Structure formats: C-alpha cells, structure tokens
Amino acid sequence: MEGVTSEPSTPEIRARRSERSAVVDLTAIRHNVRHLKKLAAPAALMAVVKADAYGHGAVPVAQAAIQGGADMLGVAHVTEALELREAGIKAPLLAWLHTVNTDFAAAIEHQVALGVSGWELEEIARVAQDMGATAQVHLKVDTGLGRNGYTLAGWPAAVRAAASAQQRGAIDVVGIMTHLGAADDPQAPENQEQLDAFQQAVQVARDAGLRPSILHAANTPGTFDAQDMADPTSMLCDMVRVGIGIYGISPFAERTAEELGLIPAMTLRTTVNNVKEVPAGQGVSYGFNYRTEQPTTLALIPLGYADGVPRIGTGGPVRIHGVSYAEVGRVAMDQMVVDLGEPGLASDPDRNPLGAEAVLFGAGANPSVREWSQAAQTIDYEIVTRISPRVPREYVESSTDSLDKNDDPAWILTLEPASAEATQQVAKNLAGHLCAGDLMILTGELGAGKTTFTQGLGAGLGVRDGIISPTFVLARQHPNDPQGLNPGGPMLVHVDAYRLATATEVDDIDLEQTVPTSVTVVEWGQGKVEHLADSRLEITIDRAVGARDNDGAPTLTSVLADLEAETETGEDEPRTMTIRAFGPRWSGQQPTDLI
Image (cartoon, rainbow, N blue to C red):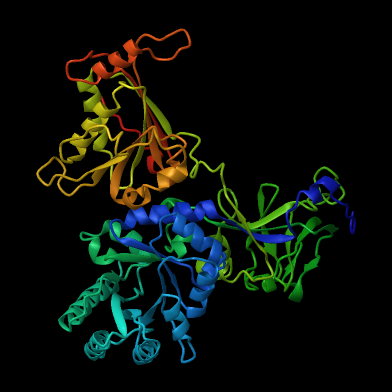
C-alpha cells in the first residue's frame, strides 16, 4: 500500500552499533602486510599510511601494520608523521611532501626522515645545523612521472650539494627514492625505463660520495610486478613502499583483491532508515533521473556525498538481507535510494527491511570497492580515501576469520612412514614445496621423530649439516649451503618453544625478524606462533609410546625408550604423520609426492 511503513523490532534496533560506520578490520591489515612482505622479501617494507591511512585511520592502521611486520611507515606530510609520534608510535617514519611552511625542526626533533626533491635540501640543512642535529633524508629523483623529485638534468648538482651538506654533518642521506607512474600496467615500457633511469641516478649519487642504505622505487603494483620479472631485485630494491595493498584493494584493473591474496579491510555500512511503497512512475531523487517502472518498494539509505559516497555513483550496489541492489536516482548529500524491486515489503512485518544492515562495500560476499569505483567512474583509491569524518571508524579484530586464526584447514594429509629414513624422506620431499616465509608447527611426544623430520627438511632445503634439537638454545639458524641441493634458497630456523609459555615470550626471541626470509620450524608451537604468519603447516608425528604408570605419565623406561628411538641404533618404528594446512598459502595446494 502506498505510503505504508512499519517499525522494526526493538531488539533489532538495539543490535546496531551505530547509525553508520566504516568498520576497519585490523586483522586484514596485518594479513595484507604479511602477505606483501613475503612477496617483497628480502626487501624491507614501508607501509604507507598517508591521508589518514587512505581513510582507514592512521594510528590504529599504523599499529596494525607494524604488528604485521612493516619495517617503516610512510606519510606525505610532516603533520601526519607528528600525529603518529604523538600517539606513541616509534617506528621509522618518512614524510616526503613539503611546503615552505613545513615544520622541519619538529620533524628532526621527532626523528622523522624527510624526502627531499629540490629546494628543501638547503632549508632542512640550515634548520638541522641551527639545532645542532643531523637530519635523515631520502633524496627523490624524478625518473619520468613529472611530479616531485629532482629532474635527471639537475640530479648531479643535487647529489653534490647533498654530499656537501652531509660532510658538514647537517644531513645524512640514508635513502634514494623514485616513484613509478605505470606499475599498474605491468607491460608498460615506462616501468623498465624508469628503473633504468633510477639505477643510473643511484650510480651518479655514489660517484658523488653518497652511500645510501635504502633504495626504494616499488609501490603496491610494482611489488606484484616484480614476481614476474627476470630480476625482481631491480624493482624491489632495498625496500618497497606499499599503500593501497595493505588496505586489501587491488591496484590492477583486471585483477581482484582476492586473486592477489589480499583481504579488503574496510566495510562501509549503515541501516535502512525508511521503507515505503510507491506506484509506477514514481520519481526518485533530484532531477527525477529515475522513475519506477512498476509498483515497488523503495528503501532509503542514510549515506550521501557528505559522507564520501560519490554523487556521480548512480547504480552503486547496496547489500540488504544478503541481496545487492543498485542505487537509483541521484546520490544526495545525506542519503540515497535503492529500489527493492518488489511491492508490499513495507507492509510485511516478516520481510520489511527497516533497520536492516545496508552495506555499500566490504570483504567476502559484500559488494566490492571496485563496483563503486566503476559506478563513479573513478579508481578504488578514491572511494575509500574520501569517506568523510562524519562516518565513525570502528575497529574490529576478525578473530574467527580463517585467514587469520586459520581454524579450518585447507587440507589434511595423513602419512605412515615406516622408518626414520622414510620420515626424513617425507620431510625432504616436503622441502621442495617450501619457500621463504613458510611456517611449520611440529608436534610429537619425546622420541616421536621431530628432530629426525627436521634433519630431512634441512637436507631438502639445502642448508648446512648439523641440525640437532634446539632445546637448550630455543632457536637455531641453519644457513643455506651454496654447495647444497638448493643454492641461494632460504635458511632454516629451528625453534623449540616447549619452555615458552605464551606468544609474548615467543616474540621476545625476535622470530618476526627471520620468518619472512626463512623456513621456520617450531616444535611445541601450538597456541604460541600462529600470529607470525597468515598461513602455516601443522605437522603431528605419533608413534607407539613406551610404558606408562597408572596415571598415564611416562615412566623412566618409556623416556629412555623414547630417547633411544631418536638414535641411529634405536628402534625403527612406524610413525603416523598428519599434516594440516592452514591459510591462503596452502589453499588448493596439497602435495601428492611426499611418500
């Protein structure tokens, strides 16, 4: 019936957290950082949190990025860097876009490194000398984008001036950077042209006496592009600067976030705030650009261009009760309308969507940012960055997300190696499927064969001989053997976490520093190391146990038997080995050649 509305149930109203919000999943941020850092390894990773972390909230996102393994944070303006410092964030920081009014003294005082593209060099050096300090700077060279950065023609004079200022102690040139203009098109010839120009500029700087420790050029698309290059290091350099990727958004027109292994972090949601029946021919919103073709139900969504939804975004999706509906009519300042396509919903108490969650974009089954950027004829970056302060940010931890806690294995494989030698062979075969960043949790009673397994793994990885239990040192590093089976492969880090009670104690041995560049095996690691990576293998080795007393505790005889079973002369019993694979790294990749 035209004009009829009904009220939602009181419990449904109470269930809402807020009228509207941009919900930011910090678990997704950490996942994306870890994923990108694995791709960039052994290069370091700068998480770019400029523009209030692309609209996601600079301070909580910066904290999550650091937890995910970011080595450095990047912002455009010094004011953004100072906000992070005021929040207690002590990670290395770089700010690179300045005006004549930029407070360089505050930046130097708070140990913010400064990008230098021209006139700033003299001013930064002067301020630093007046303070009796040394400013850390990253010189930026314009290799073709035509924006910030010294021109190639002016670069030789610039590096000579920087070298002079460095000799005076006013600055320390710790980095040289450039910015790629076409990395979102991997086939663009300009990518290699810019990289070649960058390397030439670096050589000019070195010839002038500069010795920067950090060269960086790759953004998010460049980090992905490097995976298909003959020489990935020419793109990855010493560090990558990733922005849009850490928010779970694809920089490529033809590849989705999911295809890249990224999880969208922001969900823009509100609730339906009005539902009404209208006849055919009903005009909707300013200009009457949309008129209903038949009697239908309209739902009002209280988000508009004042909240950051593009006014031009007619047709953008809104998901209600599991169905995506297209926005109709013109987006207004505070609201928009969707046509539910069916009359009578307002008068049906069981189906009236008043008060129901309305999601414009998010992860999983929700509409994507890409759908809204296409509707608005823009790019994904703009959609999330423009969400206005009127929309509260809410921060969540998706603790039940299988890509974080990984509670549900992608696959389970059970093997029964008949001997210690067979156990080692399984591990050696498994090593052929491993790469830097892989984490394994190894569980088994004393004497089950954990060290035997790790020795086989080391042989397959091609690390140096000498793998023994790390019980008394907690962690042992076994470097790659250049003369072994896998020259240039990752090292093996072997950890015994039996005496470590919590994940916090595990963090004290700095595994987060080695996990991205090594294969890590942690004995007794369940419940302690899962946070170190977004994917893992859990390997449980079972064998027949020795004698036990009436309480089920191992007797001295059983312990001695267990120890004997780990020796070359000991009992060669069959084992049952169960391998459980968790996370996106192992999705659909079950090895078939382990035994």
